[in-house]
Image 1 (tube, rainbow, N blue to C red):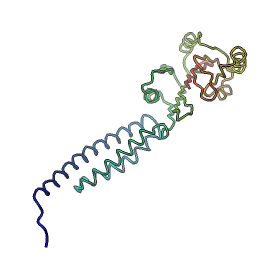
Image 2: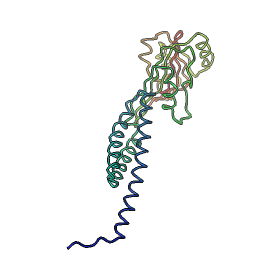
Image 3: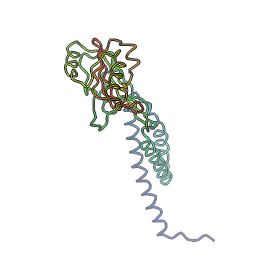
Image 4: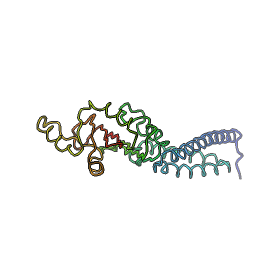
Amino acid sequence: MLKPVREDNVMDNVMRDNSFKKVGTILFFILAAVFVLCAAGFIFLPLVTFILILIPDLIFLIILFVQLKKDRCRASFVCGLVFAGVLAFHSLFWGMFHMPVGTYTKWQYPFAYSYSYGRSTDVFLPRQLPASAKNIHFEFIPTVMQGSGWISVEFTADEAYVKDLEERFKDSKYVVKIKDLGKLNQEIDETDPTFGTITLQGEEEMAEKHPDATVYIVYSNGNFNHPRSKAVFIDGNYVKFSHQ
């Protein structure tokens, strides 16, 4: 014999389902917003990181849409919570999932610059590239755990811009030809053995491609294992800002 369904239980179930549906709808729009932002990020910053959240977001978005359409409120609610956990995990371990940012166009540079520095006040690279900038290559490798990341931008510019840079950085802590960096480290070791070694990002490659470059070393912590430095390389009309 079937037991009669109490009216208050029916009302409770309806209210519960309506609540689940409201939450599911809100989560659906949040997922849609995340998808649009990730898609925009992938366009403005050719960065593999966005795919890591873009693909699962699309999957959950489709599942959530289907569940809502079939009025499966609880299923949509659970789906939204699962994706919220995935998104939280991705954000928490951002550095581990983060891929290098590399741009070669002037219009992408401001986006890459803002994305890489974030809210950091320790800014060294120029916020804007000169109008004459060509052959641009921006690169950002985030620091993960105890690793050493860097931000750098290299380009060619007109003579006036280069002269202005040389004037601006002429009073840097060290100004030396790149081929004389070894000699400089030797001199520093003799005068201050506790300082360590000046290590600059891309130093070996730079010495090979631009053996006559002048290096304006604005800062260096002298730590070989975890080097931190700010330097500008200039060779003719070639310029590179390096922040390690």
